[in-house]
Length: 304
Image (tube, rainbow, N blue to C red; front, side, top):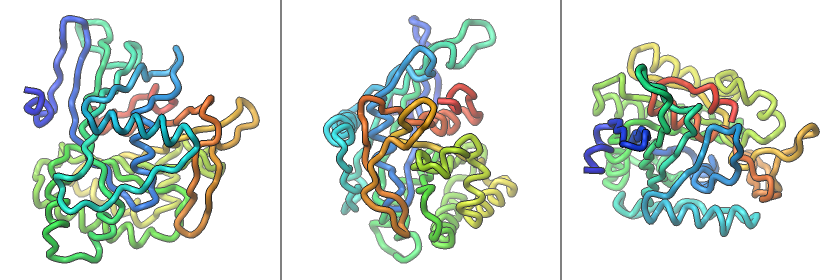
């Protein structure tokens, strides 16, 4: 029954007044875009208070529990997560299932009732960065075909780009073009095709000051990717929205600084680890997932 719900992206309301919604998504992006770190930070849900929309994130399966463990035993220790390996078949991919629970004031409001507690049941596979690169260079490869076919089953795509990278706009656009062409051939229902372009590592100062203008940031950092997605949307092939996120957040209240220790910064962007776990405050992680499900932004989540 649970699998049927996931496939049909339905809502259910139980007697406790909780509305549950399911969504199957895929996370794609380059090797250093921070895909696994994004998911692990989301799964850990390290910082909550009464003003935040997010009440809790719960692991839904063994892979989800492993993700929480990685966040606790690696990220919170100031260590770096290992890159997601390229598997031999899609059945070997880690498949994270998480329950994202929003507090009542921030949840869906039904016409004839008070706001319901909303739980987003997210089923998400984490692809290695090589998958995105292989869209450019590997032809007639059974493994790549399996990856693409699995990815095309998703109801939403989280397309993560490292906001600190500046020299891969053309490469990303070519890979994205290949993916969009295939997705359009397989999925004919444009209303269900949604891509959330997520700029990661926005704790970096030049990104943080513009975090509430993610569309402008995306256009400035990746103009060709931006133009490709906007044209795709204008042609009625699907919907695109833009988000800025930080898996680690900031330190301080007035004189803010990134809550990271840099390992290196080069042409491939910034590589960093968490600096102070006691004030670990990720930014914007839930907003793109909510949009992929609902098709509209949530002001409370955009501020989170």
